[in-house]
Length: 219
Image (cartoon, one colour):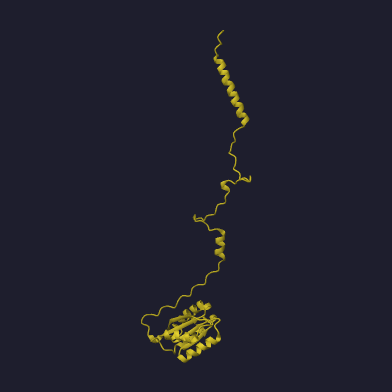
């Protein structure tokens, strides 16, 4: 049996060339590689927007974050709060007692701010209206209602050694006010009722201060 001829180098080179052709054909069938990766899609098939498409919140020039529009709108639409009425200045040390008047204020629930405004205005006016300044010391601030007993109100004022009871009320019955006025008259205590709308009127302050000038000073 004759020996098989040995493979020649040119045969090996031909086999390698055939393999290159096969691999090239497979690559062509698969198609060229995409230049960019496909965009992800949502489960429904809708295209997901790229990250840069997400809206960014604007920032102030200084870098501080600008509040959202709803916060800005709320701040612009909120009504301004009423300015607080400053309390009356303290009575200077060494003030003669005959220039000091002890005052009790009463008010209804809706007139707290009006009462504070009246107390501050009256205290300031008392120091400037008369030639001899008067200094008002607020010794009682009491809220009253239609269930309040006028005699009990007077008793609290007397316990505080008040020489005047000033009432700033709205909705308090006239009968209660008249009863308190009569009780104060019997006890020698000045009583004045002031409507909320008159607490900043100079005529009202002058009327009250003139009567206070005749009252005894602080003991």
